Length: 74
Image 1 (cartoon, rainbow, N blue to C red):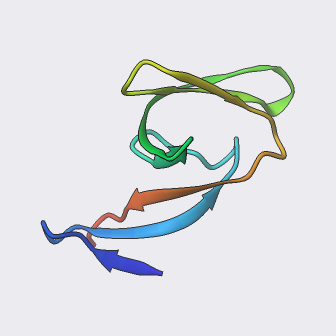
Image 2 (image 1 turned 30 degrees about the vertical axis):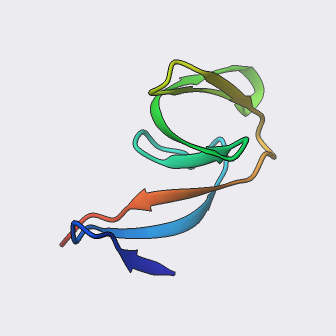
């Protein structure tokens, strides 16, 4: 599903894993929307996610999260 934000940007709710999460994704953690600032590869396919707030979240290969991603215009 894709929607437009009030500013006109096109956004989509997607499922992300340690392989597909990207900088800029917005993931809801504990009821709070957190934007991914940086990613660090860990052993065995895990990733450590650094949010703009400074918080860290480590996910393993089979973790699935719902994120909001801004879609690029063509």
